[in-house]
Length: 163
Image: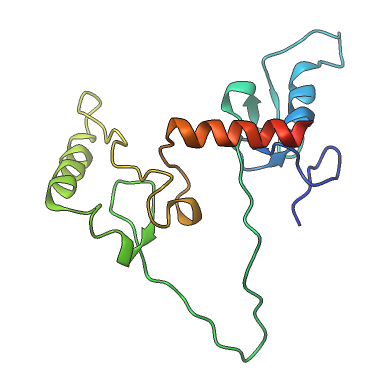
């Protein structure tokens, strides 16, 4: 069970910092907005766990998935073959990625990787990230593109959690 390290309860409208620590949205905003030394408000502060620099702009929303698997010694488990194209930030089940890894995408990524050795070359722009409605994206991808409808439903869900 994940708990907020500030209030020690399950995170409400959870946010993750760059360093990977998960907090309640209200707890981390309160932490970021107060400076105990002189009462002034700051926009960046240190993570209360590891002291990495964090800011309000770098907080990302989090969705938790309940673990559906419970393993016991001697029991069989089913694993899934994953595939990640070099130069991308996402990994999806191999069966659901065939449409993502066509020749055009592979050539654009390789070209971006090869030219990224110089500072002036184009970078991989992330246009090939999966959408939230792509098969396996919500479960496996760390980053994904979201439609307006998905963003609105997440916004409503978080408002409900905060009330």
